[in-house]
Length: 239
Image (cartoon, helix red, strand yellow):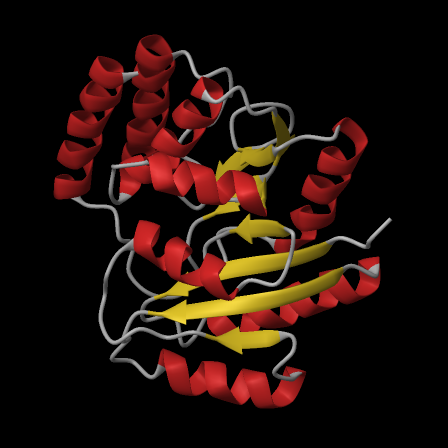
């Protein structure tokens, strides 16, 4: 049986401080677990020098492990995944944030869950088992909880954390879901799970600790909340 290989898709925008840490942790946990991997960095024209940092990391860890596929401007998360998949050589894809909110130490647990139950998708959850959120103020926690509650009531997705973005997919499953999704931004992650249910893909969950970004500005603002609510109603009407 061929050995599995895991391609991590890491979209970046102004993450020059966080990138060295997240790459070091990824290399550490993959190497310690003996897992075959590559990290594909998709930088969207960051003005802060993120790409230059990525180039230095590539020199340190090697072109076979750190693959750079930058784009000239900020084009959004969904298209970043489309761009990344084209260059992925793994048969499994891991998506996560580059801002240190997702710790690579959970990746072996996602992989183990997938292998044990032969799942199509494994998603990290902040809302079951010993998962949790650290570093958020009360307002941010309330927004997240309310968003998750509304989503659960309207869409009944069968997973406890629909807005999370730390997931493991079979490559062909992720490709089919991206082709089927129409949402952008914050709602994109939710639609992926809703569509996965429509296609009867198998989904498992692993509790994770989510830590608010170490460096830089959070990208969640008032407009994102409005877009999220619009997106929820769209998914409710169309699925």
